Length: 146
Image (cartoon, rainbow, N blue to C red; front, side, top):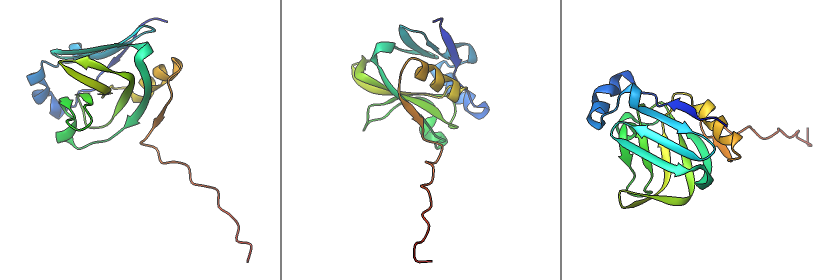
């Protein structure tokens, strides 16, 4: 399978803040192929073999202040490459990836095509779901006493 490139969505109002991280449209993207997930976000880069990918989940939207930039969750140790607060794909790893002296168990990526990126992960056999969509309602039971 060839490399698929997924640009990271950069919100218009977020771009001045993202310049602090060196982020421009030309260097904010995720490359995915059969061997590796390779995410670029300005001055930052995160790579892991596709054999280390465990699952995916589409999430969001989030509050702007918690989503934009290179973000590290102190509690969960997740890493975010966030160009917009509109939503992203969380990619969980089988084994945490050691980066900058930290073990990172998951990466959030605010790619422009959330569904397309999720489909590319699913094509590689990874389970996942879209948390933005409500679960289907259970079937209604008829009332036997009526």
